[in-house]
Amino acid sequence: MVRDNPRYAFSCSAFSPHTFLIIETHDVYSEHPYIYAILRPETNTILLIDTGCGGVSSRPDVEVKVLRDFLETVDIPSNHDRPLNDGGRFGYIVALSHCHYDHILGIEPFCVGSNGAARIVASSYDPHFLSPTHLPEHSLCNFLHIRLPRYTPVLVPHFHRIAAPSTSDGLQDLGFTVLHTPGHTPDSLAIWDEKESVIYIGDTLYEEEPIIFPNEGSIRDWLDSVDFLILFIKDRQVGQPRGTVIRVSCGHATAFKEALPVLQGAKAFIEAVVSGREQARTRRFKRGEVNAEYGQVGDRFRLICPERLVKEASGALR
Ligand SMILES: [Zn+2]
Image (cartoon, rainbow, N blue to C red; front, side, top):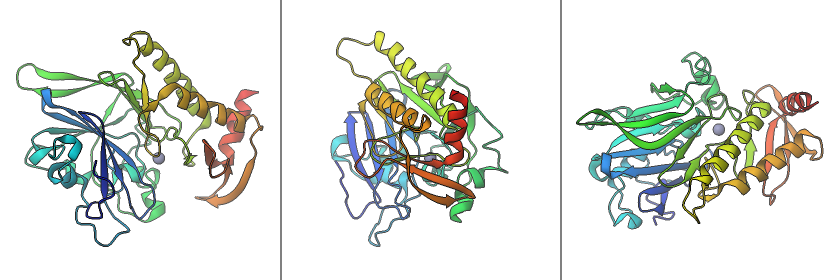
């Protein structure tokens, strides 16, 4: 485990021999985004889920700030003391859980390289939302006065299977399914890894840190997406070998935990907010809207969102 080494902007720990959690530990935005690297050595491919904040660290002594450099040059004890992508021998596929800045700012170095540019996968649910005209605003880069990184994603449909190029017949299935899960943002997606029985859900929800909706979010859509994910997981559980636990990993705070209790707990909390049983504790103005905060430090689930989204969702319940 590379834990909080002051030389690196990232820490890295293993969930399994081929699945790793990388945390950007001291980003200046205090987002501490979770990035996942999943190796498929049999296809010479590495799937990266999100790319973090670009390595801009609050610590002055950080030497390795670029995620791609971290993956290709830093020895990881839980990977036999070798870098996860030693010398860049694996080709990259980058899946973006959504377009917020803390998930895309590390992407540019993957768009070039001797080993070919990465294929970048994003949701096709709402192409307008991801259009070059709107992305500076929807990524929150405008709000934070950050330059939008240059990248061109391939927009993929619901239930898209991620494949890698193969030498013989064109494409090789990697065992990942992309699922559209609008709510946090219209382009939010989840990735189901059927080999490791893990579902990656980005910022849809997580524990302890506040679940956040921007102005462009929808709690109504979120409730539908979480219901869909719960059903999807229950369906997959039927086919699992006895004793297999399906786990959930998120864009912040929660990784590799038993999926159903996390999803069902978050759903119950958001429903309590929408029904008025959970009251706002504080309010503040952000990006032109009144945002309310529900829950408090120490609670398993918390929420910060425009109050309008709660009203819209409660109106839909009636
Ligand atoms: Zn987000």
